[in-house]
Length: 264
Image 1: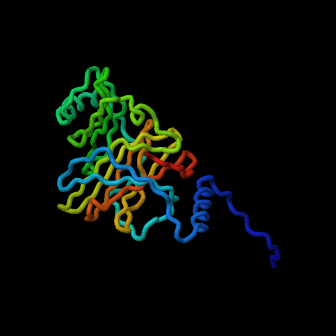
Image 2: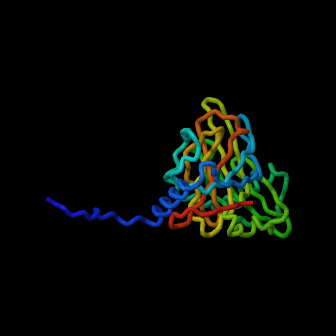
Image 3: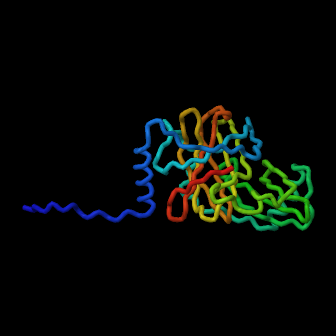
């Protein structure tokens, strides 16, 4: 008969597991009426779509990954668990698309030569398609513009030296929203989509986002962090009033630790 009272050996927790456990313990120890502080960001631009278009609201949260946060969940339109990166769009392709499509729709012409600050192929309105999301700078004082091709939203800003374009956000901010689009279609089946492009701090290695409305939430979906920018894209096959939907976003470092972010 074995009379040893020593506990069995337990594998050492990883830094990410320790962080999640600590966050869960801290959450349990807070008073029942505690609510996480959230800062609201108004999106810069909204994207046109087939049915209705409304600019949604961005919310930054510091809840751990395994916290459902609100009662109920909705099925996401597409699975994004395997997201590992965005395809780089060659400068020549981006500048050609900008000259052919974006300048006409934005009613502007940037001085040549054009400089591509960032251009990536992102999921399209149809999950099986892609779009080119680009940030293009003109020569001299002609400004900077972002655009989505095939025809989607666009925006021009005269001062490309503005802090949100020229360098990462401050450390306490973490993420700075550059532009965001939302769309809702009802036929042949309901689909709601919201995407957002951020400037990101160098220490941010991963972002997650979800849609929340009227006490219900879509699953957390992993976004992309790429060369100083972060991109999130949330979709759900649910008919909702787009005026009631907001997006929650959280960020992690390379060790899986949740980072405090307070964007402005």
